[in-house]
Length: 447
Length: 149
Image (cartoon, rainbow over all chains, first blue to last red; front, side, top):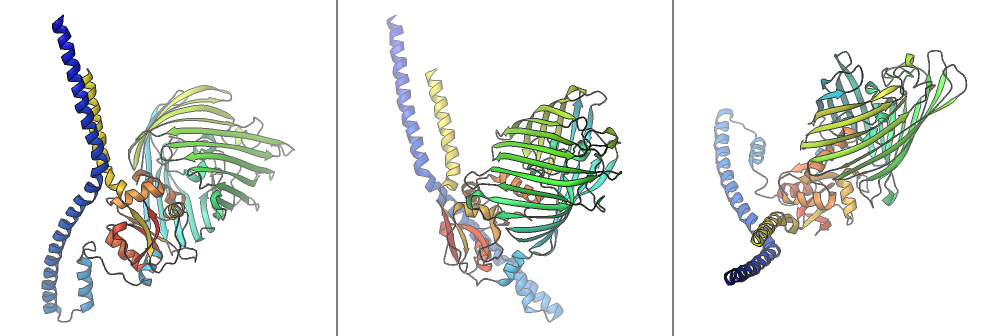
């Protein structure tokens, strides 16, 4: 018993001494944290830099000797080498890091070169592949290739540029179709006025302006119902051929921006070519106006609305008035994505040419939080087009929109800054069809 | 048991200290946002500099286009600008400019320069350029618009 008591005392003492030593060590580490950074921050890099400079100077001397030898050889061969050319080559060989040039007077040539780059094309490539399993009757589980997207931009002058986007899209019959998704000639006058003409993605709501065809950009695998593209059952005029102007509105901290668009609109048949590329079916043009705010007092917040109007002309010359209103509040940051949008489509005129007003509401909410390379997300989407809807409800005119609603859960994993793997579960309920589940995977990339 | 806990605490503290030491060099660095000496623009706020760097403001008050300059990936000043002004990390920055180009808002990301000396030379040559330098690299050839830290 006494031995046991002694052991306990010894053990307590050793614990106490360990605590004291540990505390002292922790204090030392804390001091190291506060004192040493300035030492480490400056001395080591300076020593490295001076070594590097010495090494580079030696290399320059070697290069200069070689250049002189080459000059001598060249002069002996040609006899009349222009001096300026040799000076240029020598200058090109000298690394700028070693000898900072003296402050030169502002050069108009450099300014011109910076602001008027020689016309060249910048090419980006986006794509995705994956596997999807669906519980829907008639659907088979399949591997698939998504859209291969070639995106090009080129500056003609400092104010005029061209944007082009060509898609290679797999179709229902397993063939691959080619589509000019966007082709825009852009003129940027200043931050308050930009003008573009060509084929573009209409500024309806937020999603269609923030996310285009490149699946890599969006957190989820697919788009919300209301922003689905035409080949995926979409029904909004998301693509247009026409003109668009946009810019900022001087508004201080409110950060207001506007977009005004006028285009051909689209044909009334869903599932047809989404934009009238060459010829409009009527003389009436579609108009869209959007206004949004990005307040500087809350970076990442954007809120706005859009109003779109067009006349859809059927083959029997019956005109249907189409008015699409959207409103949204979104917040995006490094770690969070919270998107909320609602829409209301209003069509007038019954299919038979009689009177009638038909409303189609829709909304979605999407939330994602980033944990390192992982982005778990949730979305709920809803759209409800009436059975008698003249544009969205007639099966002879294309796919029926009907009612669709359901949640989606998923996880995005960023493999690096240019590729991501996504896994998503959908539960979809539709009017007149049994609800079903889907499991989707996707590997998407961007270069 | 207590020893184990103590050891784990100390190890954790050591790891945290080392990590902080590694990032301290950027944390202590003082960076100035600068323009050519002939550019008469007044001091800018962080928000104004952020708007210029993300392409939301593309011209000076006189109407001249702003040439935005960045230092290359391996430069420590870049980390300070990204974190303190743009509130982004390198991944966010890459994605932002790829997306901005894809939406047609901008043509390309700011020009990357390989060294502060190159930055200084470019600023000296272009009166409409904006860039940044470590405070000890700042001299009379440039004008400071914003001091960071």
